[in-house]
Length: 296
Picture 1: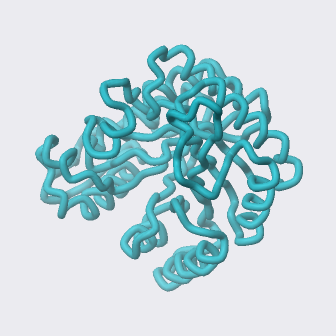
Picture 2 (picture 1 turned 120 degrees about the vertical axis):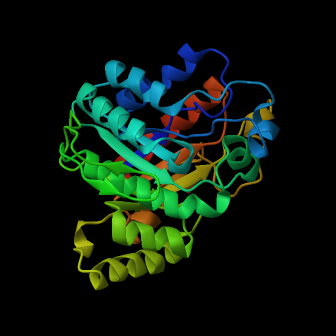
C-alpha cells in the first residue's frame, strides 16, 4: 500500500513558501504522494476555518511542486470539477503531467458548498451530471482528435495537444455517496472516498468493483484509495483543536489504522493533516513516516 499526505494549501498558511516546502519534505520523508484540495471562495466551513487567510490554488501549488520534487505523485484530493471549465482543466492536467514527468493523479469530485455554486452561477442540482460530463470530455480531449457533443459542448474538427504523458492519466473519483461510487465504477480509474472506517470501506469497495464488472469494465483495473482526515495535537491548540479519534502524531493510532485500510484492500491511503501550523505539520509527517515500513 502507498501512503500520501496533504500539503496545506487549504489551511491558511500566510507564507506560501512555507506551505510549498511541505512537498519536498514529504518526499524526503518517504511518502509516495502529496495532495492539495480545492475551493475558490471563502464561505461556510472555509470561512470558519480561515477567516481571511489564504486558500492557495491547488494546481498552481502542484505546478511549483512538480519542479521541487522528483518522485512523489502529485494529486488533487479533490478538485471540484463543476467549478472549472473542463477544457481548461484538461489542458492544465496534461501540461502538468509532462512538467512532472508523468506523476499527476486527478482526484475529482462534485462539491458540496451551496453558496459557492451560487457565487459561480452553477446550479447545484447539475453538479453530478457536470462532473461526469467533464470526466468524459477530458478523456476525449486527451485523445488529441476529440469529438464530443453535449448540451454545453460541440467539439469537432480541432486538435488538442499535448495529450497526457501517462496513458492514461489516472482520474480518481472522490466521494462516498451512491452517485460517487457509481461514477467511480463507470467512469473513473479509481475511487477516493473520505471518512469511513476500514470495514465499511471494504464493503463499499466491493460494490464499486461489482458495478464496474456489470458495466463490462475490468474491476481489477480500478485503483482503490482512501482519504483520511487526521487531527494534530499541539500545546497551543488553534488549528489542531479538532474533535477526532484519529491523531496523525500518534504512531500507534496511525499504524493500526493504515494496516486496517491495507487489509481492506486500499491501494493508496492519503492522510489529510488538519492544521496549518508548520511545526505541528512537520511533527505529524515525521510520525507517520516512521510507521511507513510497517504498513507497506
